Structures are given as structure tokens and as C-alpha cells.
Length: 446
Image (cartoon, rainbow, N blue to C red; front, side, top):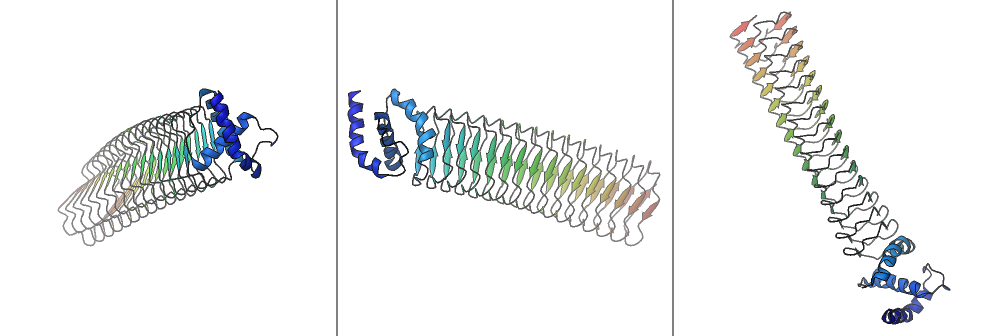
């Protein structure tokens, strides 16, 4: 104890002038006990020179519970702090409040045993933070506020045991984040808001146990996202909004148990999507809107149990779609609009149980369709409009139960149709217009 008294007295002598000359010292000048002198000297050492202080257990809980609950709030205009290292034994810190003017902090390392931190508030002017490492044992963090001006954060690693985080708000100016790792046990996250200017995010890993996420907002300027992996157990996601400028997304994997997704909006400029895999149990999707400039989609696989899809809008510039597979149980689709520039579709397979489709509009520039198979149970189709430039259709199979078709318009340039099979129960057809250039029809049975 004597050595600590001597150390404290020496520190008191060295910082005595500094204490009385600084107007921001928050303790009363008449109250200069040993603990106050020691605390002030600890602040000076840690905040200015960033040297280590090895303390005995008597001071450990005192410093941990007091320094960041008391000192940082009154020391927050000391804005040249560049590093905060609490990586080993700061196990009792519960709050870190750097919300005002700690603008030069670049690294926060809480990676090992800071297990009781529940809130990190960096919401106002911590603009130079580039890394936040909470990867190991920060298991009680529930909120991270980086919402305003943390524009230089490039990596957030929450991948291992941050199991209690429920909200991540990076919605305003976190424009340099490139990776967010939430891949293992972040099971309680319900909202991720990256909706405004997070333009450089390239990967979001939510692949394993993020089962409670219900909303992901990437709706405005997240233009560099290339992969979104929600493939295993993200079963509660109901909406994915990528509607404006997410132009570089190439793959969306929702293939296994994303059973509660009801809407996918990729409606404006998601021009590089090549594959959308919704193949197994995405049973509650009701709308897929790819209607404007999703020009590079080549495959849409909805083949197994997407039974509640009612509308697929691919109406404007989805020019590279080659296959649409809705073959098994997509029984509630009522409209398929491919009416403008879907020029590369070669096959549309609606052959088994798409029983509620009432309209198929391929009327303008779907020039490369070669086969349309509606042969089994598409019983509610009433109109098929292929009237303008569907010049490469060679076969239309409507052979079994398409009993409600009343009009088939192939009147202009469908010059390569060789067979139309309407052989069994198409009893309501009142008009078949093949009047102009359908010169290669060889067989029509009715």
C-alpha cells in the first residue's frame, strides 16, 4: 500500500499545476482525496499518452465503473483520443458514451472480455472510427448507435458471440462500410437499417442463425452490394427492399427456409442480378417486382413450393431472361407481364399446377420464345396475346384442360409457329387470329 501512496503522491506532485490550471476539471478543487488525485492522474495518462496502468484489484472495479460512467461524460471535449483499448480485463463496463466530440477516435478494441457492455453510443461526431472489434465475448451488447456521422467505418465484426444485438442503425452517412459480419450467433437482430448512403457495402453475411431479422433496408444508394446470403435459417424476413440503385447485386440466395418473405422489390436499377433462387420453401412470397431495369436476370427459379406468388412483374427491360421455371406448385399466379422488352426468353414452363393464371402478356418484343407449355392444369387462362413480334414461337401446348381460353391473338409476325395443340377441352375459344404472317402452321386440332 505504501508504494501506491508514494506513486499517487508523486503523480499528485506532477499533475498539481495541471489540475489547478485546467478549467474543465470536473471535481471540486477543495475535494482532493487520494482517489480523486489518482483518478485525475489516470485520466491524464490514459487519455493523453495512452500508456498502460497496471492496477490492483482494489482500484480495478473503481476505475472500470467510474471512468467511463463519469469521466468520459465530462471529458468529452478532449477530442484527440485516437484509440480506446479495453480488450482484456475491463469486464464490468456497461456503457461507452462517446456521443459528442470524440472525433478523432479511429479504433475501439473490445474484443476479449468486455462482456457486460450493453450500449455503445457513437452517434454524433465520431467521424474517424474505422474499425470496431466486438468479435469474441461482447455478448450483452444490445444497441450500437452509429447513426449520424460515422462515415469512415469500414468493418464491423460481430460474428461470434454478440447474440443480444437487436438493432443496427447505420442509416445516414456510414458510406465506407464494406463488410458486416453477423454470420454465426447474432440471432436476435430484428432490424438492419442501411437505407440511405451505405454505398460501399459489398457483403452482408447473415447466413446461419440470424433467424429473427424481419427487415433489411438497403433501399436507396447501396449500389455495390454483390451478395446477400440469407440462405439457411433467416426464416422471419418479410421484406427486402433493394428498390432504387442496388445495381451490382449478382446473387440473392433465399433458397432454403426464408418462408415468411412476402415481397421482393428490385424494381428500378438492379441491373446486374443474374440469379434469384427461391426454389424450396419461400412459400409466402406474393409479389416479385423486377419491372424496370433488371436487364441481366437470366434465371428465375420458383419451381417447388412458391405457392402464394400472385404477380410477377418483368414488364419493361428484363431483356436477358432466358428461363422462367414455375413448373410445380406455383398455383396462385394470376398474371405474368413480360410485355415490353423481354426479348431473350426462350422457355416458359407453367406445365403442372399454375392453375390460376388468367393472362399472359408477351405482346411486344419477346421475340426469342420458342416454346410455351401450358399443357396440363392452366385452366383459368382466358387470353394469350402474342400479337406483335413473338416471331420465333414454334409450339404452343394447350392440349388438356385450358378450358377458359377465349382469344388467341397471333395475328402479326408469329411466322414460325408450326403446331398449336388445342385438342381436348378448349371449348370456349371463340377467336383464333392467324390472319397475317403465320405461314408455317402445319397442324391445328380443335
